[in-house]
Length: 505
View 1 (cartoon, rainbow, N blue to C red):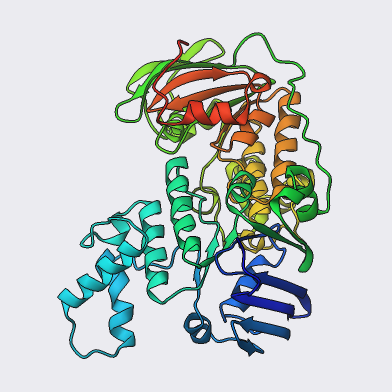
View 2: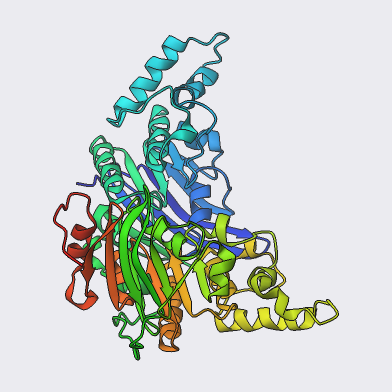
């Protein structure tokens, strides 16, 4: 039950950068023990609002009320002293230090101790982990931990400073379902002790599960604050984007009888085994499974990054050897990777160069001269076709939102004129509007005869946009699913590690 008193209230907050209004009269109130969802598309002002809340940015006008204290603006130190802690997506932990050092050094420094007592530091670190009920090896270097463990270290450290409000920015992006459940359990324990949570996420199923109130902003303006029962997926998306989306399930228009790609008993030791499937032009095949199920390794083997130990790959009914990415591209296979920032883009290069780099040879004359004009026209063509929001293809790709960056990666591989397109997590970290647009592009490509594979653990994504879905668990395909006949709950259960029954292929 929410109390009437607020831990924090941001009232009529305005903030502009170089004449661009990032926040326009925003009000946000959070009560003790509340999980409050802050939602909005990329560029809506969420990040700016969090930075005002944490003292990174001073608002141009408005009021910040923390408990009984009113502030015109905050410094980061004041925000922390008032109990505000932000855990960003990178967690801001020190990877080269141990868990103990990450947890206890702040205390040692703040108390200006001249000599370090490792016994005292161990006691501090143990108490910090005990607050959230987890057991992590204090001597382990943080860079050796899983993503979930790093997040727990960050949460434990935040609570050491008597956090009253914990801001979690996209906290479940790289977590398995089991790790998400564990995180939600910890959130429940914290809220029972009166700690408020500001939960920022794109994942609708999660925000509806965990949140007690929603505040949605769009283009820097407050749209609505309401209870979960006042929203559904459709209205949530509409408030976020100002658009109405058609949720019609994908129906392939014309699937070819003969498969373009077949896997027969494919396996890589320690990753996956005995995987057999077929892919036809005109269809979108979904492959889903939790992190660690083998889905990414399977994708990489189909693109020549990883070599399989057993089985074989056939294209148009003929066995092929995909020993490298170059081999895959030569056989008209394209791959949109799981992490666009580290695997898909050169962030400081221009949008145009990112798009055209795989096909640059096409624009070299017989004399070895590169035609900048033709290269620019090709970049413009894909910017227009995928509606990449940019004033110019000459701008660095780092200037784009996550959704537009993902469109650049997609354009880069579509420019190679592939027959097979494999997408690993095609909309991870992408807001609702861009997500819908990317799905529509993929549906259109399938209608044009492209063979598409979507690899994702986003259950609504695969059920709504795939003609067939294969479930992987522990390196094997365990279920073949018809999307029209399967609920989200059923698919979630098939993916779960607790399900032991397997069906024959």
